[in-house]
Image 1 (tube, one colour):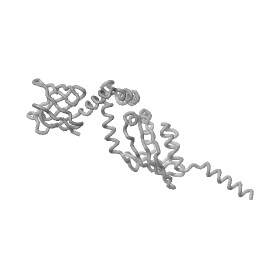
Image 2: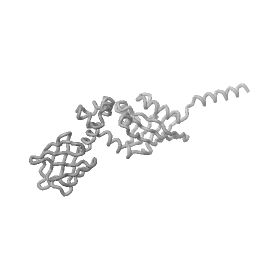
Image 3: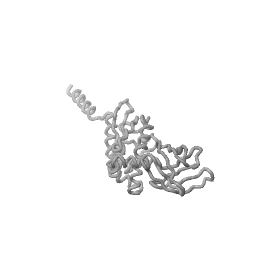
Length: 266
């Protein structure tokens, strides 16, 4: 009888010490959020595979994840919902970055599946991104003016930008609202606008001052400059200024010689 009781106690102790698969996933995410690649590797089986936008084996997955980008941008995963289904664990996770937080972008929500081989992760699959299109649209809308500001003020390479991203973001969000609005207008203008049955076939904007005008008759381009005035912009020519009203991020309405609608190419 004594031996049976001891056996039951040992079994109980073993069960108490043995982690559930959902607990393993939680620990794995904690390690991921700490950017510790060595510890993260210990959770993965030798034949581990990641299935997301790309399909990666263990080596490639850890190499991508060891990129300093994640730490610079303070990327974190938060479990919103978790289900332990015997051999797999399913989660719903919120992925946040410092860009999302400071620019007030609603974070991405991912549905994930974690598969196991014993107590190691055999694979991780991104099943779906619940708000992917909405997130990308909001990100592009809010990041473009900030990026334009950073390049305008510092003219730096991306690697240098990443290293100091918090500094640049903080500077940008503390600008007066009028300045942020102006940078948004500059950012939206960048690119090529095509006229609809207009004297000028194309307007190509680069930076805060430069614009190239292409006439509709001979297709000859010539460089000029432009100035912003709230929701209007003036383009200088050798005869007189051309006036355009900014309708939205994709549309300009020209007046006078520039009369007509100009639509931005994607």
